[in-house]
Length: 468
Image 1 (cartoon, rainbow, N blue to C red):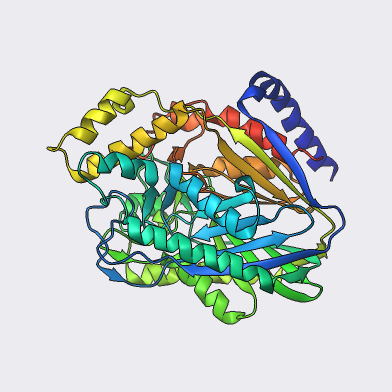
Image 2: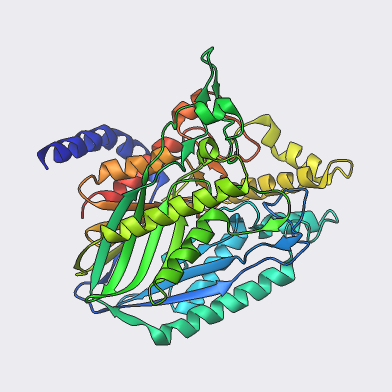
């Protein structure tokens, strides 16, 4: 324990100066759900499968042709003597800008709480929708209404979800203990970053790169090898298990076959094992992590990914240790991340592309999404970075495609505790690289955030995870 405390103290010392310099970029709110219990938890689910003919991933040219397996939103409402806390994990690619606000406001009304206390996380499957209301309005202004997403379907989905949340409250069960467990995952995650024989760095190892010998044989790189499971118990009766693992959740995509992919199918198999224990899965901070080293997009590789993730869920459950749930604290920090300064994302450039009828529809959609994000930043609206602290465990929700180094940093800050990280909260930033990645000239058309985000996120994590 001494060496862990020393490591934590070194990290804290390094951060104090930066914390004082840019603390104006964050504002932390803390509340205690209940000082002494009792606690209750209610779980909910809703089918959020897109219709045939719906666009996937926002910009994929092939729209949905067949529903291979349904998409779901799974979540829980934690009840005490303060306002409820809500977590919702969604089998969608991304929820962005005004749509993210609307999702949280809808769930907050249904659960009887405030928007800040609602954590919504997309799993980020690519054969699933991107929802951005602001971009949708911009597209409608240039004659592309409904191209990004089906507004009627979206409204109906929110209504169904709100009903599921409000109705689940009557079935809330007492919670007396929290359980934590983890297991090492074999042969799934690999970092996008690879280095060739000449020393050139590339971030091109995508989700199905395993058919290329270079990407297959390159080292795994920086990953978090562990799947974590956070569980909730009524004395010795398990009620809910929340799993999190850091990888892009695709085995294949882009052919119009709607699917929750290997993460959703592993979750479903685990649910069949334990019908009375609600199973929720979250994608961790995995902007730069894919299954590419171990996956070539074939059926056999997809089956292997399902099997190995499922096995890790089972092993994490077997290692679970329970402790009494004595109190819950909620902390929330407002992040102010700057918009990317590149000339290709200048407001005039984005508007010109959006208005240009000669451009491909997908490029105009991407321009609308970029412009929507830029307008959000200019409005001064910050990003919520929340933490639910159970005492022996902390659950964090990061924005966008946060790189895995942020998840590892959070764990280092609280090496004495069980830190579970989820990514893909507010998704307007797209990729959120680290400084060293920016230094290596990382570029992507899904990158809307500026260099310098690392210091701001580190400062926010110091606020959230510093022991009360």
